[in-house]
Length: 223
Figure 1 (cartoon, rainbow, N blue to C red):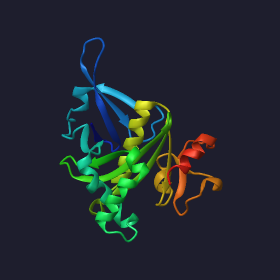
Figure 2 (cartoon, rainbow, N blue to C red):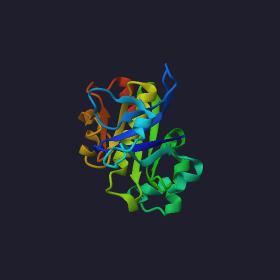
Figure 3 (cartoon, rainbow, N blue to C red):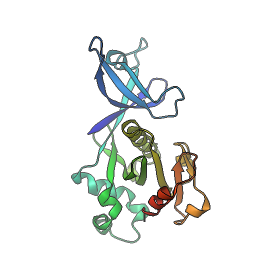
Figure 4 (cartoon, helix red, strand yellow):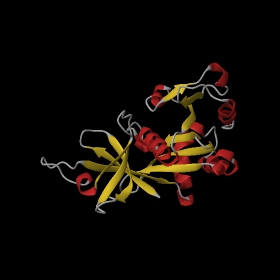
């Protein structure tokens, strides 16, 4: 499966979820999701003709910018290599990639890929479903040739909003190896000291409520 990301002419990004039929006249309406905090609503519908229209000044209302899709077996070597420079630990690239065959999180996780409209892979991440309403994000990495362009941030938010749309209220966990502010913009907060067992990787979670005992155990399951 794949989902297209769009940039609105005013600048915000959206994830197109699909097209539905209006119950009265069967006219097609695009269903799409905000990739930013919108207090009015996160999920929107708009007539397909309006979604795809060109404005009077010649600009499209929504411009496609990238796609998100599930990683396929033939993609694994490419996507796993994105993190080699950070996590290689002296291994050859081939050894690093082969090591994932023994990784519990890799084997049980579901990986997502951000690619250009031309099909060039640029960023990837792994999702870990611990239980209903609790998911982890891991192995967030961008192809070195495409870094510092916001690709990972766009992928993280797109995957979060996709799962919120599909599963309702979801709490996300992760360990950040970059400044926590990178994830704070997506609603994560640094967890209290008792959960910081794997520093310098900083444990973070969405939501304001303290972790439950079950959530704290899930956090330990990363390693």
